[in-house]
Image (cartoon, rainbow, N blue to C red; front, top):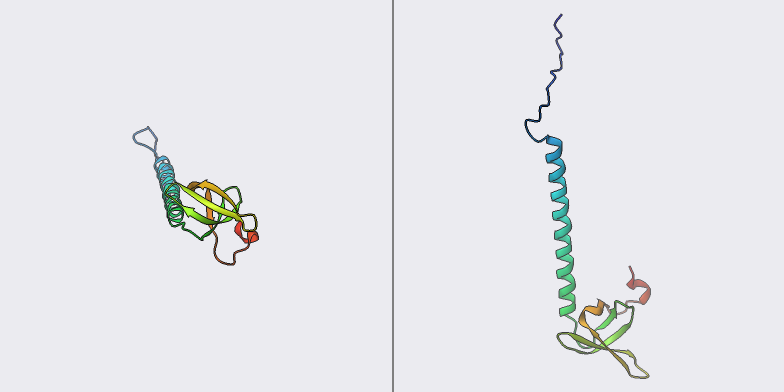
Length: 111
């Protein structure tokens, strides 16, 4: 008896890599590429922000200290953190997390 809708059975004899593995490897490569690309983009954006820090900018350090830039060299930044007592602290440029915009409140910084 012949079947009109017979499904052919293909024997897997290890003749080549299964399509599933090729697809999985391709997905991993694409995912890794996207992660690496975004990481480079974020690193470049941060470096541009650090290079643009200048005198009188209001900044927040990684430790959460908020101050105004008094002096800025290639590797260090001095912040005035208390106007009344004239307290100044020197940090490396890499310690700056964010340059604050005018009127930005500390509660909005973490977002």
